[in-house]
Image (cartoon, rainbow, N blue to C red; front, side, top):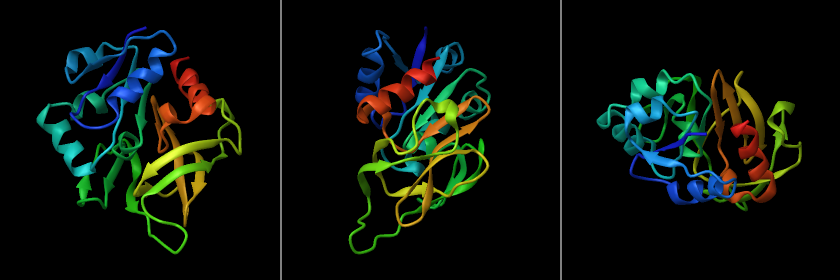
Amino acid sequence: MKLVIVDLGCGNLGSVGLAFGRFGLEPIVTADAAAIRSADRVILPGVGAAGFAMKRIDALGLRSTLNELQQPALGICLGMQLLFDGSEEGDTSCLGLIPGRVRALQPEPGRPVPHMGWTKLEVRDPDLSIRDGDYFYFAHSFACDPGPATAATVTYGREIAAVVRQRNWLGAQFHPERSGEAGAQFLKTFLG
């Protein structure tokens, strides 16, 4: 299987690559549009700011490549947020693959931002091969509200989309590569 991790020059490339390496895969880390289009599976990882990531996508000429993918693709953390119409973070226009806008999490006593740590999922889509109540590791300050594409949620001050599914795209607000056995199972299901 040809697995490509999109290299935007930021993010969790190393840990995502290691996670798939545990399955015997050697992901290709690249920003080459032809390599991305020819992959069997595509990963859009992310740690960082939406504005920077979208500027990199546009500077690398990857917006149409990502929008036109037909094969299974997975956005992780910021990579999931980039699938939406836009983000409050820097008032950024994103890929527009999923309707909705990413909003800032609001800190409150006992609930700091960023949201960092293990949080229990409420699963709406049983085809994900994860169970209602499984814990996953989160590290983020922005999130999207649930919508028609939402496959799982968590509550952190408000209900937020933890997993989305739209056509060939799957998105995880959490970090499956840092989420133990439940995260490994999620990635195995994505690989098919």
